[in-house]
Length: 154
Image 1 (cartoon, rainbow, N blue to C red):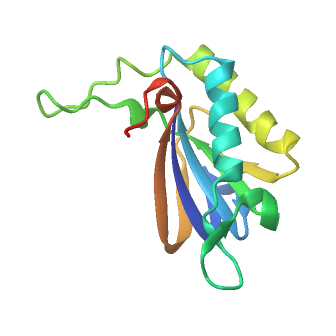
Image 2: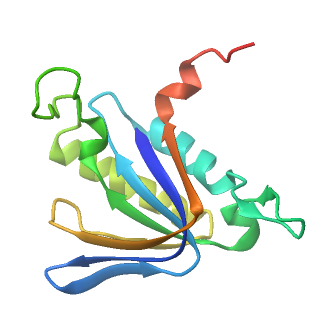
């Protein structure tokens, strides 16, 4: 599971001209689900994202997490995070989970964020969405649940 996480002052997602979800200060999480992912991947990413220290403390250092400041989270399904682009010119999405599994894990991830006590907005799964955001910093980080199984460099 991959998450492109952006710290924002505000963000929203619209579907067919109507606002589907919006947040104030917090994090936008563009979430991609692969064929290999399961609930443990969702739990890892939610734990990592909610506790990432990307918000400034009184000394303007990255010392506060979304949980520390009561940040809001906008979670948007983004299968294109699993695009394979090494060969040819057209992205290959064969590593992305099928719609049924991806929706199940996307909804599970949203529930996990809410269970942490965070206010969560969402897009609409498998819909064409217009995402608007004001990136704060800018701060943008890529998280991948596969990283939890990779050895750390010494």
